[in-house]
Length: 217
Image (tube, rainbow, N blue to C red):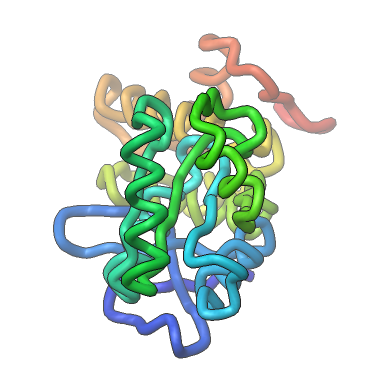
């Protein structure tokens, strides 16, 4: 079961977040694959240092989650860490400790793999806790598919999200790609996306992980 955390919610309250960012309004979809990361941010006061790392697949809503965290706590966020100099990260670390304000570093990978040349920074990074967003479970995948189609205003058959969840690779990347392909098909054919159109479109595009179930026509 997914829940929704809105930009107006406070981290001191039980989190109820949802995953997209649109204009000034934000929300973040929460399911079993990311609720540990959400709780980690909620309890930032218990971090051993005033810094943490947030990792997860691209398309997982990690930037939205980091933005909501910054809005709720006044945290400084570096997103992404890749391409930021050692000196800039080191100074941000020191500011976080001095001002007692959280620092959140967003990255594709864990700190041990970062190309850090500054010894003092590397030793500090080894002390930071890490929150990881995993690939979506069934409920989160279903909610995300519905949300992405709604954002695009794509007309779909009611049964389409469940049809897709049962047949596509369970990853954020696959979900975003499939929604984009079907939205383009709906625009081209000027009709809503049903299971027949989805089946033909995804088979023609050779979408990795797409599989028909036994008994499909």
